[in-house]
Every structure is written in structure tokens, then in C-alpha cells.
Amino acid sequence: MLANNAESEYGRRYQFNRIDSISKFQQIVPPVTYEDLRGDIEAIKRGKQGVLTTEPVLMFEKTTGSTAAAKYIPYTASLRRQFQAAIAPWMLDLYRNHPSMALGGAYWSISPAASMREVTEGGLSVGFDNDSDYFGRFSRYWLKRLFLLPPEIAQLSTIDAIRYATLRFLLPNSNLRFVSVWNPSFFTLLIEYMDQHAKRLIADIRNGTLTFPTPVDADLKGKLAKDLSPQPSRAAQLEAVLQGNLSLCPSKVWPHLSVISCWTSANAKWFVDDLHKRFPQVEIQPKGLLATEGVVSIPIAKQSGGVLAVTSHFMEFVDENNPCAKPLLVDELKTGSIYTVLITTGGGLYRYALGDRVQVTGFLAQTPIVEFIGKGENISDLCGEKLNETFVTNVIEKALAVHDIKPSFVMMAPERNSPPGYVLFIESVPMINSLIAISYFIERALVENPHYAYCRRLGQLRPLNVYLVKSGAAETYLKRSVAMGQKIGTVKPKILHRECGWSEWFNGAFLETALVGHT
Image 1 (tube, rainbow, N blue to C red):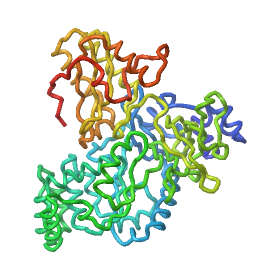
Image 2 (image 1 turned 180 degrees about the horizontal axis):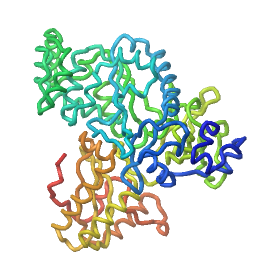
Image 3 (image 1 turned 90 degrees about the vertical axis):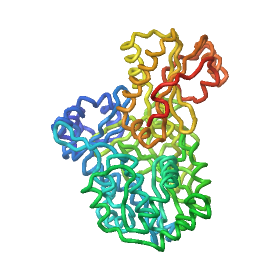
Image 4 (image 1 turned 45 degrees about the vertical axis):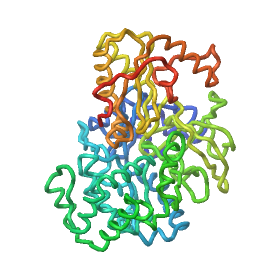
């Protein structure tokens, strides 16, 4: 990677042509964050090539930022091949251990649903056109034979339309064998939508039609419906399931489903039990640690964690107990230790700090097995929204300044209701109209974060709520922090707190705002 990119601007800046060992690489090239690369990436967005790589940048993928709402990650052909070098062995292992999966269809949800297509000022697209673009040419050919959904579904512009079309193409096939989603709640929300529209879906399957419950572009609807045909026998099967269970019981709708791949670590684990209840016969396989910037680990059958993706990127690991020491390499990791990850990729990220914390849980042969245990930074992540404290702090401070409110206490934290969401806890003179205006301001700013916006569109998160604290919020915050194990002298105020349940501690009440319940 260094040799290939020695003539890029970044390669000349750090004299890649002088680097002849890993130790020299670590001496000369500094660890970086996205903020360190922002100027270079903005230049690429404007159309400049040869900045981080000599290889052309093909497109960008967008993910959550820290000081800004979003990060733009450049993708090259080399980076795509590195992703494929991780995905291929995962797929081989999966189908080798579940050979019956090859006898039926698969449902993959990779790209964010209902995301607006974006093009940078330099003409580079943002986001893949098709989920199968993540795979190599041979894998795409093979997987297209298994995918049950037409790629045109990605062109639908609303979550409601995407959910209906997804179910319209999944339900006729009783032989669904494999499901891959990110957050488990994504799939459970799809199942709930299936029950809400069961009769309409069954009628469409019987008649060979596609009747969206909301308006959809006529041309796109025609493309999606062109190959549909009446399936009265399958409709009768689904009607029998509906009448016998008062709902379209998913384990009866898809009796051959054998594996669901999804996040099960960190906050995602709170939603796994619901998935188990709906699919008691299905194996739920944890996802590996796959970030927009690169892939760290892949799942392997019969392993509780993910195996490091050693055929993809160059990885280094910062020991959490000794952060000032030289980062370790893959062969230097120890069972039980916790590390944060630095990756060097073919996309032009060199010694890039992902911010992900992993714990080594064992080894498969000589390759470490790791479990994702959270972000190194203060990031709140219930459903994949990845809210960064710096970003949230900037948003809240701006909201307070715009509305001229000087609270004696302010903090945003998640509440694990159904659905979960975020609450702004604030102690101030009760100017109700101003506080409601602040909630609108903050919510509008939060949805600029693509992951938060995605979770909101899916209904995985409800809108921001406001809790007006009557008095003594700072004292209550101190007491709960101590109760959670912090030393009283080390308790620091946080504008974004990752712990739930603060409304049970503070003395006050929620404000009824127009945001509450709005999706």
C-alpha cells in the first residue's frame, strides 16, 4: 500500500518511499483521526485526485462524524477488494456450515434504506448503487441468484414504501434461508409492519399486484411489478397462518430460515431477545466488526466473537492499559486485553483511529478472536445512531445560544422506552416555548447525522423529548454517578451521557412537545 501510494500528496508528505519496515512506518507516519484528514478529503470531494492515493477515488461512503454531522470516506478499487477479501471467507464459512442455505433465498440489508442520493461538487457519488457492489464479480453473480429482492427497491424514497416492497418480495417465498441486517431491531420493525399490512400483502400475492399503501412513482412501481404473477396457493398458506395465529407468525411464514446475521454486541444486545422470541428455531450469528472505513473482524461459525480480518487491511492495536506504548501488531495481542484499533487501508487511510474498542476473547489457530465492546470516544449508540459527544455538545450549545437560554444544568441521554429515544434534561427558568423551540432545533441538527436520521426514519428511535428538571439537577447527577461506581472527586459533567434511566432520578416532568410521537 505504501509503495503504491508513494507518489500521492500524502505519500510525499510522509516520505513513503523511505519506509522499509513496520517500525519506521510507525515512527514516520502519525496516527490520525478524520479531523486530521478533513482538508485532504474536502479536496477529493471537490474533484482533486492523487491526494491520499495515486489510485482514483471512485466514490464516497458517508458515516457519522464527531465535530461535524458526517464523515465522507473515500473508496478506491483497492479498498473494495480489501472488503471482498474479508466478506468472501465469511460467506464460504457460513455456507459450508449451513449447506441448506444454498437451497433457498437470502435477504440482505446493507445500504441505508431511503437515503437520498448525493453527489459531491467534484462529481463523485456518495453511496453504492446496489448492495451487491460490496461483493466481487463472481460473488455478485452467485448471490444475485439467491437475493430475493430486486435492486430497484433501493430507489424507493420512503421507509414505508421500502418496507412494503421488501415484504411483497419476501413473503411469496417460503424458502427464505438467510437474513443479514445490521441492528436486530431493523428486522423486528419489518415484522411488525408485516402484521400491520398483512391483508393487503396477501391480496397482492394472490393477485400478482403491487399496491403500495402510500403513493409511489409510477415508472418505478411498474419496474418493480413487471415480473410479478398471481400466487393463489401461497396466499392461501399465508391466510391460514394469519387466521391460526392472529398475526403472520414469522417462524411459520419462513419455516426454513436458518441464520440471521446481525449486531449482538454493545447496545444491540438489548434487541436480540425480541428477535429470538420471534425466530426461536433460527441461529443468530453476531456480525463482525465492519466499519465504513474498513473491516476489522468477520464472524466464523462456532466462535463467539469475530476473527480478525488479516487478509484485508494492516491493523495496529493500542493497549487500553498502556495507551502511550507503541501500538501492537496482530501477533502481539493477548487474551483478555482491551484495545482500540488503528487501520491502514487501500482507500487512503493510514494509521487511522477507528475509535472502536475490542477485547481479545481467544484465538482461532493463531488468529485473534475479538468482541466489539463499544466506542473509545464518548459515543451513544442504541440502534446504530452513533451520536458523538463533541457533535452533540456543539449542537446543544448552539441551540442554547440561539434561544438565549442559560441553564444551570443540561444533559442529553438515551431512554430505553419502546421505541427508545433521547431526552434533553434541562434545569432553567421554565420558558416552555423556548424549550420546545430548542427541541426542534436540536432534532433538526441531529438528523444531519446520517446514522441518527436513518434510525429515526426506520422508527428505531423516537424524536427528542425534553425533561424540565425542577431543582438540584447537578446534585442528583453527582449522586447517581457515585452510585454507578465513580469516585466523587472524579465525576465530570457530560452534555451527552450514554446511561439510560435518568428520568427516574431527576425531580421534574417531561414536556409535551409536538416532536413527541412524530416520526
